[in-house]
Length: 357
Ligand SMILES: NC(=O)c1ccc[n+]([C@@H]2O[C@H](COP(=O)([O-])OP(=O)(O)OC[C@H]3O[C@@H](n4cnc5c(N)ncnc54)[C@H](O)[C@@H]3O)[C@@H](O)[C@H]2O)c1
Image 1 (cartoon, rainbow, N blue to C red):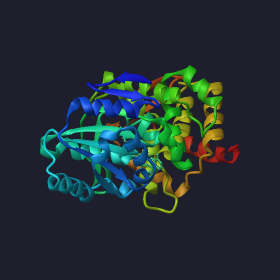
Image 2: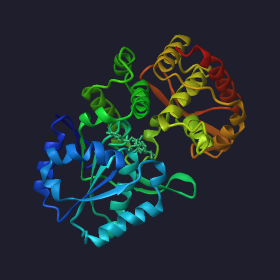
Image 3: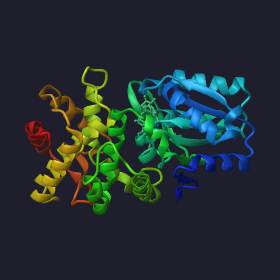
């Protein structure tokens, strides 16, 4: 079991972490315990949680429907209503048992209920363990815009229990793996080399821990996302735009799937800008294609993607600024990119899809 120190709280990683949660809760003497979960984590994770953390056997369970559509005001209102009905007070605690949807929503609800009560994240998806477990971002979607209402709020603690991944569906596993590859590619060549020799459907406890440590290094330098953690956006300028364009269509992508395409397109931009060599570009290309087998970007979406990039928060004076890989394990932020370079990279990516191996 290992403990990573973040912004005023600890992330405990390992298969004894739920026992550690039990001890933490005993020590804290919260007035009441609430567990938020969705129908999948209720079925697959809650029994394990209660067995290993018996102090929660009397917890009030708040179940919500799985999926991004639950990160909204109506579900938030249901959570606040339940907290009020069960007389949750300022010394109550919410335990978010789920993927990034549960932790973003549960964290947001806790952070504003009675001006803020404690919450603990127990991530159950790979994305939530490796990526969302540090950084203090909580949010819901509003007005059709992802994460448009939210605040930075730090959990009281995070407990990562990798056994939960045994029941995670494969496509969600792959989704989380995309962020693991990203953090390695932008910050740690040795870790990238290790991942590229591994398997997509297997991540070790040490690799989860490594991802958290690397993300935490960025987050600690820039707790409120004012600039220094911009490198984490690699693959996300194109990825977010693509995700948004396809939202609600038959070809909707999971976040990780969009980020993989984003990383491939943006690596080509890095190559055009001579931030990486041909050899490095080819390596990124082969590794990401082999592991993720991304799909082509439909030509008809290209203009919409460009439009979204023009409106992206990272675009200033009409010039898009990207965080780009600048070597294996390195990243350069605020790189000005032209629309011609983006178009060329998308074209190259589309041609390359047939080389999926
Ligand atoms: N706050 C942050 O720093 C941060 C970072 C990245 C992503 N996010 C947010 O996270 C969300 C995506 O998170 P996600 O990919 O975990 O999605 P998710 O929470 O929807 O989980 C994915 C699916 O897996 C199921 N699931 C989760 N754990 C399971 C388990 N152990 N066994 C069986 N099924 C399980 C869920 O029920 C769901 O159907 C997005 O809303 C995104 O904005 C937040």
